[in-house]
Image (cartoon, rainbow, N blue to C red; front, side, top):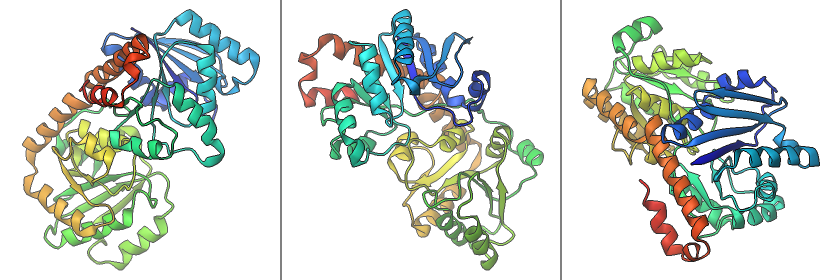
Length: 392
């Protein structure tokens, strides 16, 4: 099967294509996952540079897609699609309805699958383009089917739209020796909790701090290590730590760290903790699962999907420190190598390159089958619901 994966988002830094392939691992990982399932994958990425790169069986074409309102740019895209002859167009992101409409004009008759990347329903000024876009697409992929509901309720997706449960990406991290990782990273804790994410309202570090503080009463060796990029709440977090003797001395703010160091810390830790209110998937959670690290994460749709509804790890209620405290105590009681092996086995079944490839291939095949049998197979919302549950 020939697939074109298309990214309309333009790198604000306008990095060279070779740099972008290193900086955006998801761009590469999703393409290679589909290729593991036997698909012939071409990536078409919006860029300020025009380049063709072939890596590990995948072709990457960099073009000025977001300038596609101009006739030359649209003609170049149409010519490339004519050359590649894809059977399915897989578009990353739900924030480009006008670009998708132009894509449909450039490639009439080719079914389009959109994939959510933590998007929200369009605001009213853009609702008309979204509604038109929603009528022509063949399906939408979300990490959790529940995430489609706001788009349906807003009227930007039809109620009979085919919805596929597919995580945003996979991960190349692997488990490692915890003692060696602790020594190399110079971290400690019994248990050692790891936070990876921005210090913002959505990630809710203040609730996590309170939950950890309560758990520390029964887990006196507990330590929390925090890796973060953006620090909008950093001042409040620092004040909170200084003011609470249950947190002072056991909470460590590392700030930004390299991707390699994140893997080392995940190998060293006993549990990965997150307080997110909302996530498209949760890249840090996927990384933790790849390392066999027990997740203690909020009970939100994407995290339920990634953990198998809590089949591995523990789910707790957002904004509820008592719920987090209980989850941390339960995770501490379990612990051990058996727990790590079970988490990694779950990752292999559901989130590995091969697992993601199978899910993508099933969606591509279903989208193509629907297009071939339209309009009869497209008529019934009941049939669509069955099909959305069938592939996995």
